[in-house]
Structures are given as C-alpha cells and as structure tokens.
Image (cartoon, rainbow over the protein chains, first blue to last red):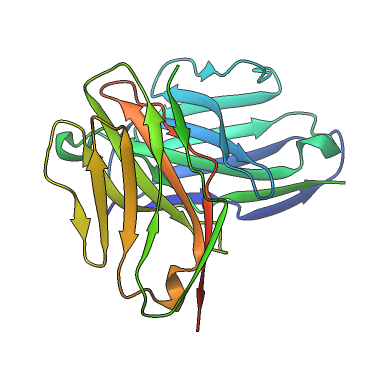
Length: 118
Length: 114
C-alpha cells in the first residue's frame, strides 16, 4: 500500500517550453502533496506544499509563477515548470501524505522525474 | 527552527554485518515524528521506519531498528544482517505533529561490501 506514481520519469525539453509533471497517489487519498527538488548528491529541497482545492504554499525563494502547482483532487497534483531554462534541470520528486489517521504525518514518495532543459 | 544532523557522510560495511547510522535533531516541541528514508541508486525514496516521539518503545521493521533517545534528541538506525540491497543513501527526517513538512538531514551514503 501507499504507492505514489509520477509521470513522466524522464523528460527532455527545449529552453522556453513548459513541462508538466503529474503526481498520483494510487491506493490512498492524500490530504497534502509536496514537491521537492533534489540536486546531485544532496538532500531534498522542499519547493511547495499543496492541498486539494486550495492554492499551494511555496517555500521562500521558489518562484510561484515559474513552478505552477495544481492539486485537482485528493489523488492528483501537477507541477508545471513554465518557460523552462537549463538551470531548471534537476530531479523533481513528489510525495503524498495519507488521510489515514494511523499513518498521518507520514509522506510517501513518487519515483521522481528527471528534467533536462536543453 | 528545527534541524536534523547526520554526522556520517559515508559508511561502508561488509555484507551480513551490523551497521548503525546516527542522527540527532533539535526541537523545542514535545510531539513529533521521526523517520528514516532510504534512497537507492534508482532514487526512489523509500520509508524504512517511523517513530512517534510519545512512544518509548523503539520502532522495529524486520532487520531495521532504531535507538530513540528523546532526552538526548538522538535517533539512530541499526541495520542487522546487512544485505547488498541495503546500499543506498539514508536520510533521517523529522516533522512536528500536525505540521506536515519534513526536515531532512544531509544523508549518509551506505555501501554494503560483498
């Protein structure tokens, strides 16, 4: 149980284009989903927290107009990198926190998306 | 602000041996959760073990167990009978009750040597 999927797993795009990444909780409903960015050999950096039906909360220094987050349902959140540039190339990971009381406050992670902007 | 410290950037151990990864944290809260996550070369983050701060009993999951010392704010992970598949980056993480956000340590890269 507690499986989170992410799509696509890998994407290469040209500079200036937009890329959408989907995060789905497959076997549970998620109160909250999170988006992280991970640079090579580093820990995860939280970008934003999203709750279904409300606006995402962005961490300091993260451009909300560049990284658009939509949390359409209790099982789906999307991250759109708008007008991507080479410096946006990174590994993006989502996670979801289940509604279930016995495992509340626990995040389950998707497999990640490697974005390469040429 | 809470912090999580993992003082061992890299460790290696022979297969079948036992290894302990250290983690300390800092918080003024009394209700919180602690986690160990594993990130193998595939980069999929996998939950290894979870500990509620109000529970005195140390959490265990098969070959994985923790030594939770609340007064010392220490949360070490012990891996018994280590296997090649345990080779991964291990992250210690912390969240306050009801806060949702995770604070991660910098990670320990563990290599199991055949």
